Image (tube, rainbow, N blue to C red; front, side, top):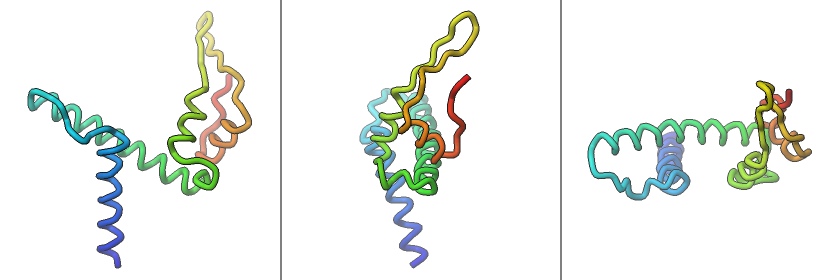
Length: 108
């Protein structure tokens, strides 16, 4: 059973690499660019895995898919005026998402 679960984690990681990060084909012309793309994709996979774990712990999958949650958070806008950071007011949904993920609201 342990081997099966480990295999499942690896398969899901490869699925995320192929589908979420668009790595079906590398489409590069030299070895250095391929290594760079794979390195960036590996870092992105680590970030996606951490986000997945936080969504599980925070119970966000009951309400959102990862894509839906990212679309909600993506609407947040930040501007700088005279050296001060100005954040557009966040919605109730965004507040709940930040809280469930274990982050403070991005205000101030």
